[in-house]
Picture 1: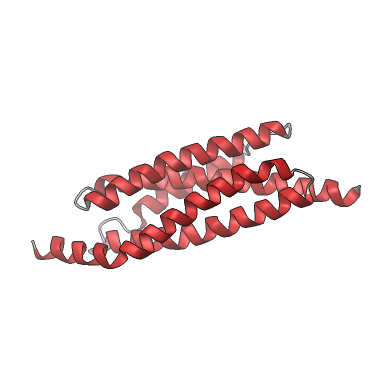
Picture 2 (picture 1 turned 180 degrees about the horizontal axis):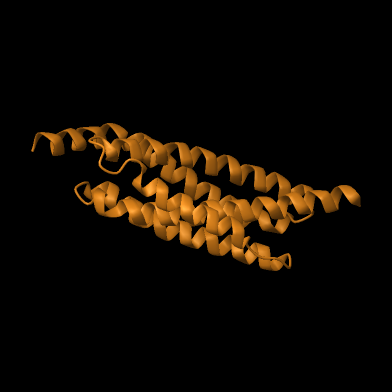
Length: 165
């Protein structure tokens, strides 16, 4: 019984952490969108990414509420501040869009791993019914990560075209 309680505590902390990550993604993408306008495909995908992260955060809210708890306001404030700083970290760099794409690829890998961990924790915490929502979010992150990886050469060429113009 103690093991299940510990697993549930770790699981709920993981849900809160991932909610904070999704909040950070929303803020970061919002800060970077205007600078992606010269790259129409990337711009469209990142707008969709912002919407998808909003949906994923809502799923996490629902799971937390189902377990009688909510997101961590302290984590939300910290990640909101981090998103603001992250949005300006590459701002003004000549190769800003390329750095942002590389950062997004790394973030997708992190999020995929986080959702895999949450799926395992849901089992350990006795909440296997939560897995389908977590698997849906993980699949969405994999799709975006795959798209970024597959389109990286195209984005490099688009960047070079912008630089030559």
